Image (tube, rainbow, N blue to C red; front, side):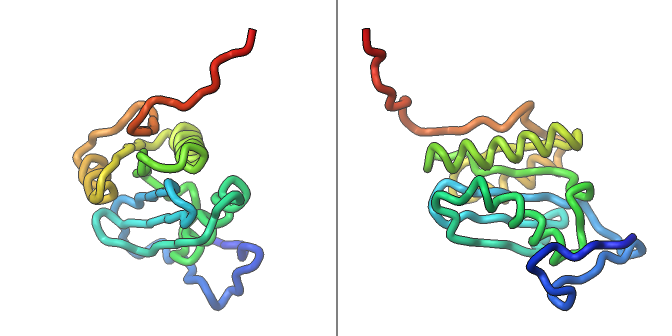
Length: 154
């Protein structure tokens, strides 16, 4: 398998994947409910890596690059993800909307299971569900309060 370096990552900064190496279930975790976005990569219940960055208003522009960087550092590609766990809230409306859209699109395109969780142990709970064969049809946000919308003008 040949990997093309991701722009901005020197080849010395990532390991190439060795096909003969045994891997369990590769799971991607996403949490974007606050200005510091978080990505996690697991092999079953073993953490392979994590990526945190100050996304603020650039989340939509940076999330795909950061996912690719995290995968590349482990010598993996998007096609090797076998499950996705998302933090569903509560938190930033826009942050949750962006990460859940990315996660749902990736899960749908690759026909892989997705689980959305909230609470302190969201990633552990989500991984446990995925490994047990439980999944959501789609990941939906949890806002913890009704939407604050402006009434329509007449």
